Image 1 (spheres, helix red, strand yellow):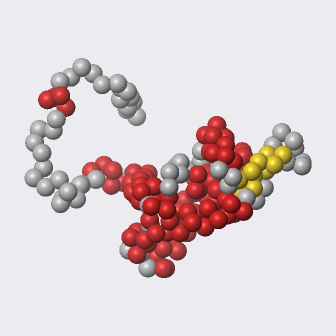
Image 2 (cartoon, rainbow, N blue to C red):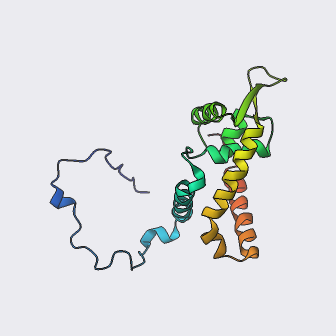
Image 3 (cartoon, rainbow, N blue to C red):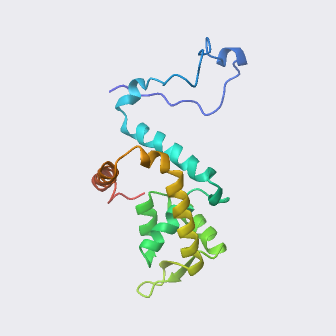
Length: 179
């Protein structure tokens, strides 16, 4: 197996001319890009759609200036009252330290609270406040509006099948992994 060299994180001192493409495409937006080797990379295809859906959500007027990830975290807490921070981080697929920052933000706006666990005082149970429930309803509507174009391209059956396939992939690959 060949070793892949890591790309440098900083730019070298090449001139601006050497970074320009050899020639620009006549109509850059009219042509569909060929995926090349990416046509067989599931992660790229999923991420490409996720990037566009996330941008549509962030750009939605009902979104406000909400940090990315807060909607998902708030929704998971609402669906799982009393969930622990560690479990939530695992399920959301984010680092525990990032989750702490997001929870601080949710508490600051009054949408969620941390309550010491009765079973283990070192752990916190997470709960959504009434104000958080109202915000979640508004954000859910905004998310569905932001996804309307993508949703409308599928039938109700296809959308349900897509959700089932995504859940199957998640369960088989990531459900029990530690972050």
